[in-house]
Image 1: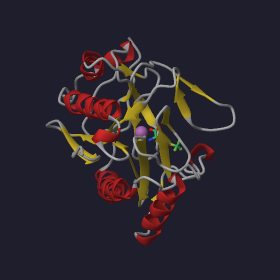
Image 2 (image 1 turned 30 degrees about the horizontal axis):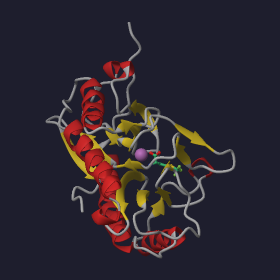
Image 3 (image 1 turned 90 degrees about the horizontal axis):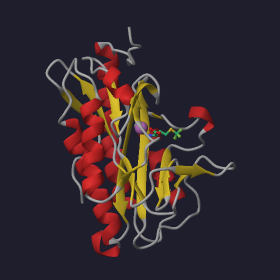
Amino acid sequence: MAHIVQGTIKTAQQIANIRESGKYLNELLLLLREKAKVWVATIELEFVAEHFIQQHHLKGAFKGYDGYPANLCLSINDCVVHGEPDATILKNGDLLKIDAGLVYQGGISDSAISVVIGWELANPRAYDLIRVTKESLEVGIQTIRPHQNMFAYGSTVSQVVKEAGYKVIKDLTGHGVGNAVHERPYVFNYPHPDLKKTFYKPGMVLCFEPITALMSTDFYQNPWEEALYTDHGDVGAQWEYMLLITQEGYEILSGIREFV
Ligand code: MF3
Ligand code: CO
């Protein structure tokens, strides 16, 4: 029989903790979106997150994960994911990805948004890429059916992105989450054959996160940093929800639904 690529089923208590973690995460992401303005250094957003985490007696899920040094991934323009907060100053028209994860009583949450600094008119193409990326996620999750496989999700996301003239970065995927930042399975954003062997089961918690670019389908990494960059130096975007699979369908445990 073909190997089945499964994720873990969470207990009711684990789900309650992950849900609470996700509520805090939404609050944090909205706070960070408000603070992400021209002339702000990305490390200042990291300090905002650190303060929020301490204030609410939480832990950052990313800090210390695989040696990662910060609570946030803040990735600008062609830096598509895993950018480390530093002295870099946000400029008008920058496309910033804000990716964060929290731990509440062992329950781990993970979600991300993208924002154009200075809003739509500062960079209309980047803004449109974000709009399409979020749209692909919204349409993609509508295909989720408990006990069915994940192939329709991957096909749908890549179709929405492609029809708008943009690209999915192929090797950057969603994932299981909840007890660790990254659990099985991989949730591909294109019709990867493994998705046919990967089934939604009630009690699974999954991150769905299309990661896209204007032109690139691949990324590269410099040996001295965690950050990943688009192959062609074009702008990349990301939007991420964390979902619980239920008997009826799904519940969004974290992620920002409003696109501004
Ligand atoms: N949200 C990120 C992802 O799914 C998590 C980054 S973990 C880090 O890849 F340690 F690299 F920050
Ligand atoms: Co993630």
